[in-house]
Length: 221
Length: 318
Image 1 (cartoon, each protein chain N blue to C red):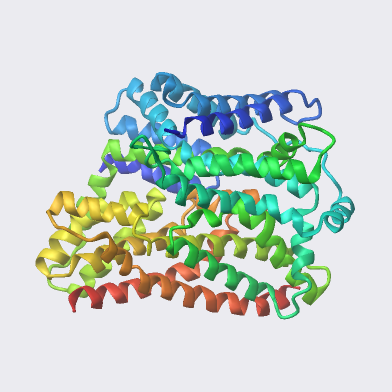
Image 2 (image 1 turned 90 degrees about the vertical axis):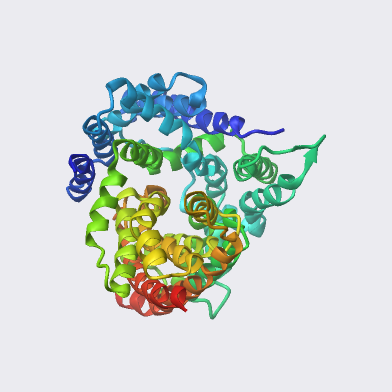
């Protein structure tokens, strides 16, 4: 039971808004000590964990390109492009992006989205461009809400699309784990197909909220 | 065969050069410590498994603590004004999208086409690295396309603009990797086993619906703690999914486990522990409230969790 103190430390640290890097480092060291790891083992665990997880940081490799394009007006051009489409409101635009993200992820094309390469340079400025056509200059609260919703549509679309694809990590994990431990022969395709009802539910639930977003923005403006 | 190693040199090199730029910036509010943070972070990414892991671990802890105790800061990087950007956008037009869209489309192209090619019976790209190699190739292609299109006067302008964005993210850039490490330490310390034991005590043996709810809530709850449904799945399945729901109540495994994993994903939407999904985007979008994205996602997560419980109570038992 005592090893759960590490978890408690994380929860308290995040709740008190202590710097997360400090919280995570301290919680990691404390849990490892409580779990009986030697100091050398702890250093090794930090090192091998960091080396093995480098791929999660890789998305930042695109930042110089995105920064260069922003310097020459990429966000402004995205706004200008959208301001010509008369019926496109911010909510409808994000709904279209949610659908695009879910469908492409379900086909295994998860790299067609993401915050550094799609949301910051293209999707968020487009949403703001659509809002600007409705309201003129947009209030700060509208900008903040649009940013949060653009990022959320990207994440929700990816999560509840990719699981419908056979060769994605979570589907393969389920098949591999169950086959190895319980001697079943689960077909990865079956698991992927059973993710489809949830994907549809996600689109209906979040899509409904996005359609109501425009009314919320009008109130904030 | 193309492996993914060079991409980490590209990424680490970029971080390191951001550190060098900060070291040269006399106006930076925390010049030397912030420079040290990015240089050490970059060097650690380049080094990876080429150095002993205890050494890398020590460097990683020092780097994390530099930012953790508040010694790093954000500098100001000179860039173009809003008016200049609008003028440039009017001049270049929709061609500006070409380098931007090069990144996702070339990545997909490399994954789909080059990922299938083999040379002398060996795969052209090492298995499991297709997306990483794709992103690396796509980044270089986009950089070349942007360069040809815009012809910037300063050769290093992409690195300077890259620093502007990376400083906007700040220390949050290190959080996803550190959280992955924490997950590993939790597992080694036996946190998962303990949670499994607790959950097993909570499962009612006589109610199928309650057992389904415990399995789904366990997936979501443990994912809230770990930030990753992959870590929760083996633990909850061993504690509840397999012994109680499949063996005792006769659930069909494929729909039960597929939707069970997605119940875990609902937890991912609500937790700062999934930093790369929930904390890095607000940092990159320079949002004032770093938890605003999670707040937007919570209502969808709750409704979707309920939908998943409904699916799991019915479909696997048909």
